[in-house]
Length: 500
Ligand code: C2O
Ligand code: CU
Image 1: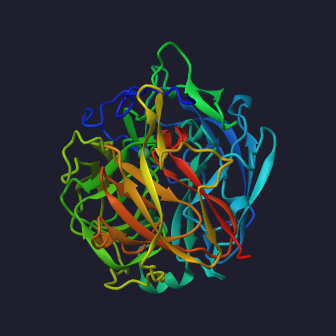
Image 2: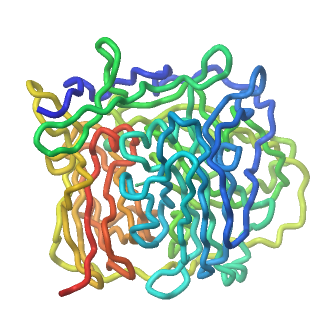
Image 3: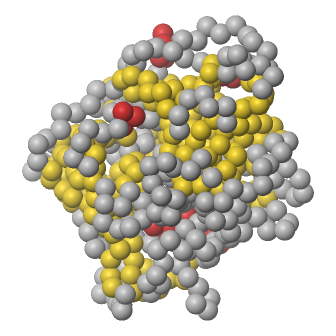
């Protein structure tokens, strides 16, 4: 059989240290939060390169693979509807091999989607990705996306090494809402990593390729004596915008914070130490219809939340952004949720605050969901204990040569996502911005009523989503965004074609 993965790999948190339920010693918050450089050009050139960056507060800098010399890479920030062509130049070390960049959440052509195998950017080469920032010929909703490496079998490694950044799409009409802007609009990419004594990254195991039987497609296996599969790349340190335990000086006013979980495997249940709630206004794929007041916000890998945090009345206090245990499940249920103190807001003086918290928000239109589900994607282990197991979808491991579902351009489809395994998965679908139709047969959660592209599926859960296939034909991916699961084959292809 083609897979040599350890049969007991579920939940092995082997590679990089910390047990997810354990809180490390409280950090002292002694380096400032860094806001990644913002690029506003229509045709930016971003060089993927190895660079030593400051992550830990003391000691050496950490060599990483970066977009543009920093981790996270520069934030690309563009007005909606204005075509943006991003050229990525691959100047990574030769051993990186080809890369592929995916703009997660955005709607664009298949050739610009960072396909895992189809358009590799080899060392020394460049590729220009075309993002019209339009949806069904209209400007996209104001959003906040995640660009990251998507190369087959190496997505986990390449993201761990630093190939990730944020992309904000601004809708100028959002100005009327008077949400916090400028320095009071803070992008925050949260991710975990582990370090050696010299501050270099602990490297998850290198994959090697072995030929599969029958399909002609190569599968991943792992080197070294009895090397377990790197099934859960988790880190000992939780970082905010690439820094360990940073602080940010804030005024006693409202802030907009764009939370993005850039971790490979770990999820965070964000909360503030002083008990103030977040007000969630968006999902990353546009605004919600109504703001949702949330005491804690659980985000799995690649999930985003657009939130307002109010520091009024807190002058002189320190507010810690934490990740707290989930209350809806037992801690040992394999959710990958991490407990940590992430960063500190040092609240200063009061200042003029002309921002408002609207009661109703201009949410993007949602499709009318068809009654009939036309495709079910089941996330589970495939194979068998005797012959080897793999993370799969509908009992199959990813094969880039296979199309798993065909759809017609212009059609609206409802799909069921089902978790038949006993670990949480975070399921991502490319190409469109999706409406959540139901969760476990009931109404979606209040913060799932906008548009989404990633859903949390606890064991046994069932989510129905719908979208109309607009504008673009070709192959697109559906996969688990726990990147080790994706690299282990929990990925499938759907292909959009025009009606004959
Ligand atoms: Cu964020 Cu297919 O990935
Ligand atoms: Cu998964």
